[in-house]
Length: 482
Ligand SMILES: Cc1cc2nc3c(=O)[nH]c(=O)nc-3n(C[C@H](O)[C@H](O)[C@H](O)COP(=O)(O)OP(=O)(O)OC[C@H]3O[C@@H](n4cnc5c(N)ncnc54)[C@H](O)[C@@H]3O)c2cc1C
Image 1 (cartoon, rainbow, N blue to C red):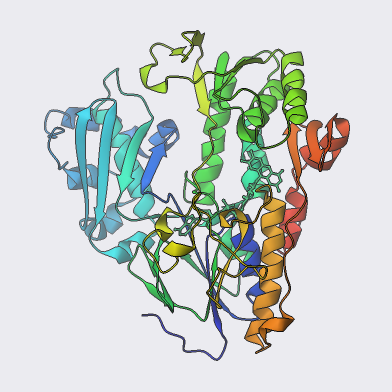
Image 2 (cartoon, rainbow, N blue to C red):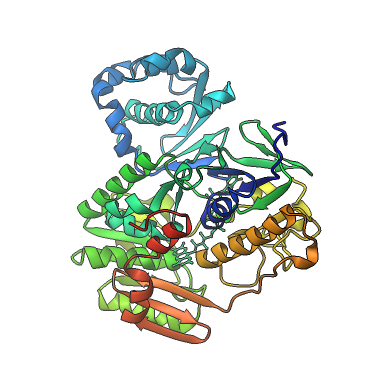
């Protein structure tokens, strides 16, 4: 176990999203702070845009194709070393990577599962580890470069994948249409946490006094903060994230008809971003529910619908898309309609990040929705030294990033008091906020709901849609707004 050696109290924060990043930043000069953050709760990772990593493998593509006959693709093992030895730039690490085994199993060409077994956990920290794994996938796809293989394969990995950055969660849709926007929104944890320790691994268990990670580390804590709001997936480094957005942008630019699946805030905001920047595209949004933006009032949903219709976005309600049976760009809906699209974006929301807690000390503190039940001081009920903040909590309010940040500030204040030895009566309480939500519609307009007042157009647009609160969030983290 990595123990409590210093004089400072140790605070371990699990989850580096809107809430976790801010509390870690706020406490780093008052305690010995550890931030644990990673991608993918379930060990499932979808490689959405394999093309961007072809850069690694382009030069060796032809050699790889020749290898096709030799690789036993149907068995559980591939000749990883043969693949690896051809990767330019990784030769110096050859010995290290001999210890990685990748096994692949093919049930059918459209359903490929790859397991990565990293024998020596320390390799996960190796700077080239994930580039290697990515390259491997790319080669694997080339080996299988048969027509029926598409780029959305599911990859299961045994260990949580590193995540080195915090990305302001509600900005990623803008970054898809304007990749340079992500320069300010994807922030390396080390940039705002110079005085904290960042562990890029999944937290997998909690005991009375330590957190266990997927890499097998045991991190002792005096105080623990759980902030694993939603499961995040995608690239692991800032550079990868930025190139990922370039690829998304190209995909949007080159597509004519585009399909968006899901009519919550993500689907609506993405449809709006695309139609404002590319007004000539044919955008269709299909939503299973009976109205858009079901997380807020009906009027807000209606305003979003009118706005999208005015921009000629076709919205189909009450239907779902059968994504498993797409052929030649023809998507079937549950209502028997066929939608032709060059590409689709799945905007159905990420699962809540609490599955890892189900076998831990906190298993009885989860409500029926998988949220952690907290008291007014934001401590997990019955645990004096464990706080929970952000979307993971059962606080009765709309789940919003600005509220997650507000929780972080209240919990940080309470932690500072506890660290100083103050008693519980001094602790601040958090009062659930009144419903307020802002949905951007492109760069200038939006829909806002503040308590029972709903408005659309330029005013909400002025508040959110221009900068998407990026300057404000960066400043909170102690960074320049630009
Ligand atoms: C399209 C869209 C638009 C939005 N617009 C706004 C807006 O305008 N304003 C606003 O205030 N809010 C907005 N929100 C909501 C906001 O994004 C969330 O409320 C906020 O991100 C919640 O913060 P969090 O810290 O609780 O969780 P998250 O930001 O989801 O962070 C959780 C982190 O924990 C990590 N994690 C999960 N499990 C583990 C584990 N076992 N070990 C280690 N790490 C783990 C995840 O990878 C992630 O990094 C929007 C959301 C969407 C989808």
